[in-house]
Image (spheres, rainbow, N blue to C red):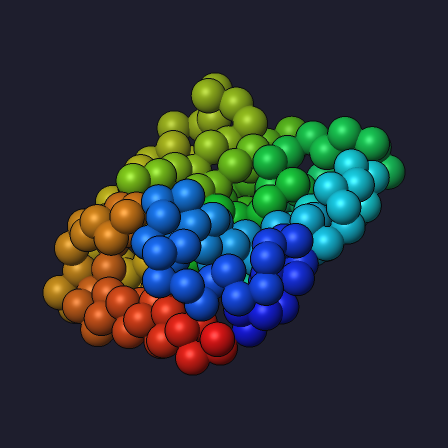
Length: 213
Ligand SMILES: [Zn+2]
């Protein structure tokens, strides 16, 4: 996005972002980082910080993010595990309904395998009432939270096994080659090519931003 557009949407003086002394301000740096992570904040500012419009903008942004995450296809594939049984409810019952899988696509296959194994076990043993509350990557560990800690031991074993596999699986591409915990602002399990690619993409975004003056 061009700097003049950002300046207009935020209500900053024209050419504010083209002045070196402004760009070097820590608050400008923080602002640009926030916009990089949450580009929809610009729409919030453009709405005049209208609280009602802001809610719609946030809901749309979450919907867009959910569509971008391949892991969220598992909600449709295994609705008995991940979908809200009462979608009409005003208060979503699971975190899954609010933000979906809080993981990157590289873990899709292992989550698919785990979902299938749990589903088969539930079916074979006619178990009802088991669902999954939240799935996320926390400090590069897979956290898979069922609705109950009284889950059958074999299911807990399946979860532990998948969590162990995730430790050696790149969160971005799914490879098991050369995967390490890495910190680039936030901690991820990643292979070297993916870390390099992400760093390159961040550089490219910066370059484009600087060119947009
Ligand atoms: Zn990778």
